[in-house]
Length: 253
Image 1 (cartoon, rainbow, N blue to C red):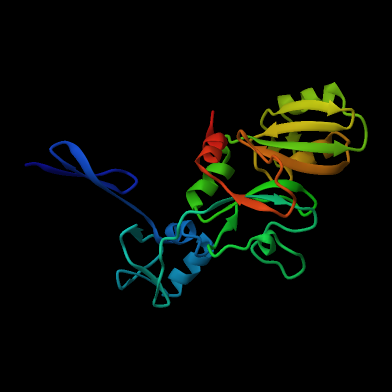
Image 2: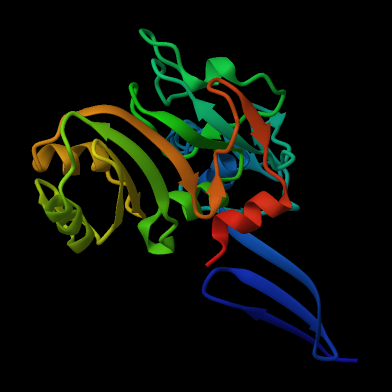
């Protein structure tokens, strides 16, 4: 009987028995695990590690140390449990900020009433409405927000004057803004002053800035779709859990 143990570049330990995989253990940096578990942000986790408050299997760790799903992680002596993965779709209303907390404004978290700790995936501006995901799965959040995954986000924008075909083609080709060139997008003029824009970039206020560059003032902006998953009839301020069918629609190519 032959056992083979291999370690790849991502610290993925694969144990094989007679050339058949029987167990897999993935090791990741502890700050990433704490973020993925929804305990805190990576930056906050790094602060906790530097302060000597984080231990793995009873041993105090330093920045860069790794752990696996089966390891016992504690913060201030309290064990951190891997949470049940939670995925929510929220229809963000006008007049709240996409943040965990804010001293001045109401946040999206004021609408979420579940026991699991979740965080917003990306952000929508104070005066932008529509689809926003919340989760405690850091890997899922990264797949949605990182441009390399090219997950399309579709917006409806109402502007202050008729939208020209020339400007639609300009957005589709890509535009130069103060922080660089935008990726090509897909544009449909639905009504003289209502335009649909599909883009996979997640740069700050990207849709508003593109329209402003072309001389339009945005009266209303709403995100209605991520991937192939539509907001549908979900009312502002309401949320629902995502199921497997929903998840397939998000990542469907």
